[in-house]
Image 1 (spheres, rainbow, N blue to C red):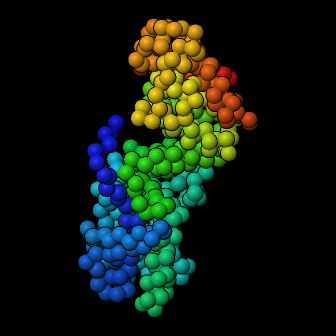
Image 2: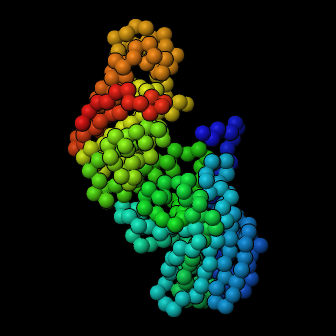
Image 3: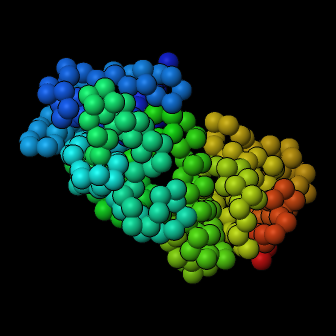
Length: 349
């Protein structure tokens, strides 16, 4: 896991912001005749970042600019990627968007962009279109432009993201709603969980699973025979997944994880991160009817003291927590595993 740096964290800019800045700079060359030394844009919440140009090229009826993404202090896999936008005059039809090298195509329903479209999300599209319209008015040119976004190496980087599971093939997505990357923000992860739910529902999934890590995900997927698109990248964000599922229900939901994180869920925590929730060992002892557990230092140590009855008590209580808070139309089950992937306890459907 990437360690959060000490001290104040430097924010960065999304791929969508970089693509917007590149669009503006390329249009200034296409219609104005010269590339700017740097380019400034206004983001949806009023920020006005300035971007240096890392790549320029031009030809008859087209120009392109590349901007190196700076994600600040966030451990973003796209930090340092070159976001290239080529703008080309087109014969009517307004602004169109195209995927170049390293930008994915949407192949599954449920995402904000339709199947068969390049994975350039709505807000970046709006921001780039606004640049076309503003500069077309400035230079008295038709606002008919084909925008092609490329991210060299994007196909390889995308293998480290959720894109393949979401049905985005061939590369990365051009993302961003505010244009700003806020370091170590939970929002991006939770948004990806939401998109995973949307894709699973659009694909007709009647059973989905959210797990705390790679080992529990592998165990649960094999146990339940679930396809990749039914596996939600829950991680520590049980609440982010469950709250969205309550609004967008699926008939059956399995939650899998290690004894430590599911003990916290059993005690009512919905954020399972070690820095944001802790096991209450006094409460665990009372729940399991075993006073020895009050002296444990970790949930794993408690399991070593009490064995499978403790794991089963955790599974049963975690099931009660999610059913009471998020049941309604959904059935839940819980799978508790150890570090090696052995199933310690199950509860529910």
